[in-house]
Image (tube, rainbow, N blue to C red; front, side):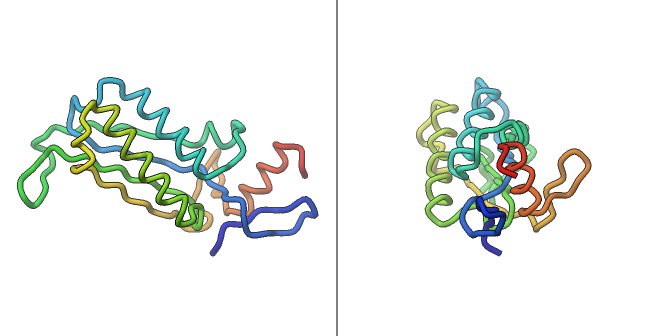
Length: 159
């Protein structure tokens, strides 16, 4: 299903994405010296690429988590344990192809910069996953895309 928004007439229109994405970064322990700064930059990056309004409803519910792993706790098929995995979850249809490409490119750059290791891009994987409609639970409620749009419009004084 394509992303939807409620236009000024109160009808649904395809265009504005609605999401509170989550990013999970899995990396060997010690790769990143400032994990909080990286998490904040990653969260801000996806907000920018999704082009949602910069309001607390979105910014307070978009997060990145840095998970440090002991090198002996994971391996590639070739035996390496110096890779980074970034798993991005958005709502269904949140990113068009241009947004996917831009987001992934920016994530690679942020990971390499935060690790101070440009070669890390060769050992980093980014996966993009979509939650099912109704799959965003916030404040005890499982939001659909339309409910997220309605809530945001109310908060912006447009409904």
